[in-house]
Length: 447
Image (cartoon, rainbow, N blue to C red):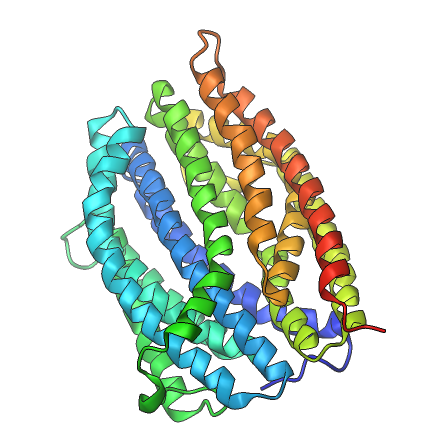
């Protein structure tokens, strides 16, 4: 356990964010490695896997519910020096994770075709997406267990073991991807199915390593059979805190789905370009997101210990650090978008669509960073509903005009990108206003 109620706030953020960033880069590389080899299979395969990847976003939304609820409750228990309570929360989160994994596999296989058919008119794109999801779905189910164990550690201020496990699992995925996708050394290329299978095997490897770590080395929170039975009060708390944050990801899934639907008339080139551009954007967000993900544990421990001044200082430090990073990333995407895309595909039309997307949406990177920071504050305090409200406002302001624009005869894709930029600025303003209101109401223990 690491005490975050003392010492330099900036150092705590950097210390925690560094391994989180490495872990996130590893997770991102999972997708980029698959994307690299899948892109060699053609635009239909790239469009199918990209669209299926958005469906994975819906599952990630559910893992985020578990992640946020677990980190908030455990970090607050640590701040109050209540180890037994922290361990109870951890074991209940594992129980929820196992149950959710089973449900996700069943639902995912049933829902995949319906979703992919609704956002693409190209049969080849739909079939490639379905094939990928068939082999990738077990990976998504395993993510619940990985998230529960990682969140348990992060709530206590420990992040390095999770990073190491993710790094090792990436090595497994990188080794398997060319073998399974392209048939290197076997002469039996599985195509998009191999991409999904490689990720699933790597995720299983990660679960085994994390389980070994908890069984042999972790002492503050650990698996205890007597605590591994349903405690509905704790489960409800985990889900109640985490649900709004999961709702944010669900809204992001809707946002992506609306775009895929709106541009389907432009064919697989447009969908492949958007899929590639959005995946690259998510990848370069990693440094800023890592700081935002480190923030809830820092906020939670100080809030639990009733040190309000450190809660406020943590927010200010995070705003400065994240905004600075996002400003640099924004300039990079505005000035050199093609340089980020050429390694994945040689199809000029796909690169052109992706580059236009990146160069325009880069305008909203700084306000997006402010949204990430505000979300970290809400998670640490244990009230994530403001995050959901701000996300819902953005999606509402985007989705309805997007549907209207798509129905016009002079509709152009670029209109969607500018609409997206405008709505992120509005979301940032709403989030900042709600942070000010939340801190004023919640830090009442200060005199």
